[in-house]
Image (cartoon, rainbow, N blue to C red; front, side):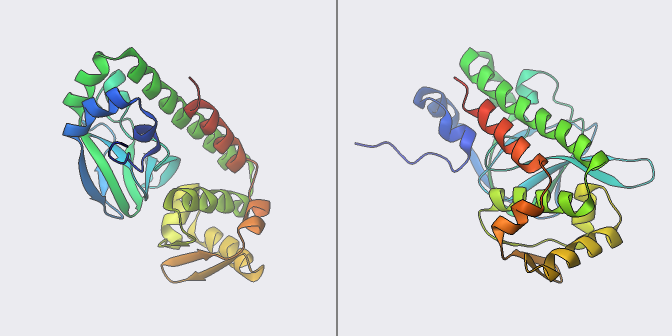
Length: 235
């Protein structure tokens, strides 16, 4: 007889049965409410998040008041794994960019379970590596690639995490994610809409031609996806 269904979160679903069972009694489902700041930079993290859908942005706050996204975490990953591997102080702001659902686990329980399992720690380390690789790619992408290419890359990533083509996003949030002014996003979004790739209305953007969006994207979308797949599939 098959056991209970596993989590929609890729990390939890990939765990050996005994490791998942050690976590399961302590897991709690919570909504991810768009715009919520899960933790601020320099604050202590109290829970680890395993998103089912939606997206959590890790952003760096600048002295002038702006913010730039360095990584996006969703159902393919975990937010807060560093809490089990070291410090519980967050280095970045973590903001819910797309609404959804997540499973959370108290950091103290998380650390206790991780301390008893080398294989679990190794799994966490690989997923943290994938987030670090994404952050590195984002730095290079924001420095070199066009706004339109970066916007396409960001939209593709969000479609992957949300599992749907209609995204509740404002131009302000998109501008924050790729580190540009709002008028730059407006121009890039208009170009994609004129090409019939997306349909944009106030507060929503819908992907019409996925293949065309991939063609419009810079190389970073595929680079991050390949790296994440490689790290999450390692033995």
